[in-house]
Length: 179
Image (tube, rainbow, N blue to C red; front, side, top):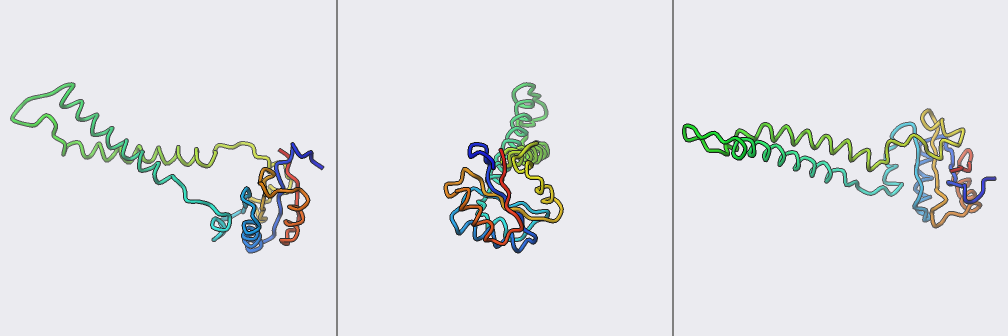
């Protein structure tokens, strides 16, 4: 038995994706909010069942692209019109149509960098250690088993009640997870 201050939560093991999906729906309906499901492959409908919200990643990518476009445009403008202006044959100092290619390329570059950084930051990666790695059977989550973990910091969490609830979902085992 793990001490209460050392308990991360409880994890239940399921044999099929359908069992996990139904268990996830019932967990959400029961009022739990701090839980997650782990599968060896994507399961259609699982994100909705867990109550995942929309991500802010598209806004991060858009802002990165705008910053890239402004950087490309302003860098070329500064170089041609401010730092080293060349006055010849009536050409304007700020010939903006020539800036389009570099501005476009920097838009793509900055958006791509913002995407990678945003994904890593929003998903909490890299994460070389997680408390669920302490459960020996959890290694099967990358092979052929499905897991539903409820965190101890959930408002509805009670060790015994949550264990009984997870067992009632048809799980093949419920395990305590140490921090």
